[in-house]
Amino acid sequence: MQDQILSAFESTFGARPAALVRAPGRVNLIGEHTDYNAGYVLPCAISYETLVAISPRQDSQVNVIALDWELQCDTFDLQQPIDHHPQQQWSNYVRGVAVELIRRDYALRGCDIAITGNVPQGAGLSSSAALEVGLAKAMLIASDLDAHPLELALIGQAAENDFVGCACGIMDQLISAAGVNGQALLIDCQDLAITSVRLPDSLRLVMINSNVQRGLVDSEYNTRREQCEAVAAHFGLSSLRQLDPAQFAARASELEPVARKRAQHVLEENQRVLDTVAALEQGDLPRLGQLMAASHASMRDLFEITTPEIDLLVETLSEVAGERGGARMTGGGFGGCVVALLAEDLVDSALHEVNRRYFAATGLRETVYQSEPCAGVSVIFTD
Ligand code: GAF
Image (cartoon, rainbow, N blue to C red; front, side):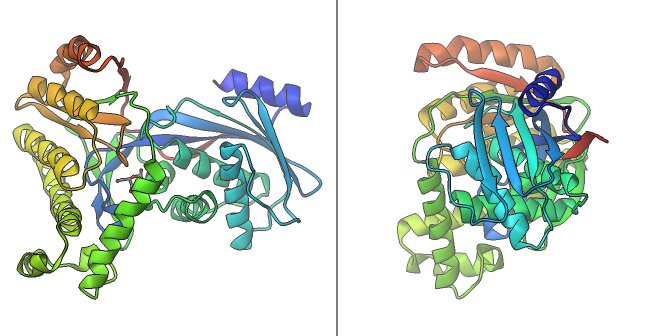
């Protein structure tokens, strides 16, 4: 991938790039739809990543070439109003990051950029966040600037919220910016405090893409967020994190059934994240499996974001895991990936079983990814 981006950059812009940046995708182990409710999440960065090659220019022009979108190009000027690109959605991530950097008063230089990556797109492994964080870091480096990982994450999130139009939380950008080798991160999305959590050595991290075409993801996602915010507002609170579970239980009958289910998921999922951290620290695999199963059931029955194909993958993996691991859907939902934490010697049989059952039941073929928890965004070289 590095050779390809370097040679595409050189043949497009006539010289080797001044810097090459990588930013990882992520898998969330537990804590789904809790980040924008100021709750807890437990993601780790993965070894699938976006690469951004960049050189500064003498003018205020930004020229971008996208290797993974048939070498499409985009050009805009940092000193002119930056509008949405009418056709190329990938361009709007570049434009959105530039707009946000300018809004925050970074003195950006024009630049030439090439982007590529191997984070599967639309799989719930945060290819968008990897792109945003990688671009923010690269555009700063090309301007002789830099920013703290948290700032990079906030820039990426703002680009996605305000320019691209998805009301995502902070999890994906923050893990892509701040990931730690070999560790998952417990993030408290209320104060953005981060605690590293080591996975037991005996466990392997496996992601299986259902390859279900995700439809209406952004609109369903934004609806879930609005539903949660409406429940918080009903109780006069700024987020569901402030809602005491006892207070919720006492007054739950005031809420519509759907609103009640959404809030119940978030409250219980927050507790499951903390319990999962404890289970991982104690190497308590049966408990880990129960918590992942409960999280999945809650996403299926209360938050209503799984699909039958995803449910089948989780069922199959949980069955093979037994008391030595667990599985659940990961990410925003409506398709995408499931994540499994499995004792090493179970991985082959789990993948075999999925392969045997999934196509027969759904007509779809799964794709398997394996990774260790990885470091966040970094500069591969700069001159
Ligand atoms: C998507 C969002 F981008 C995250 O902020 C998070 O809400 C996640 O869905 C669900 O947990 O990845």
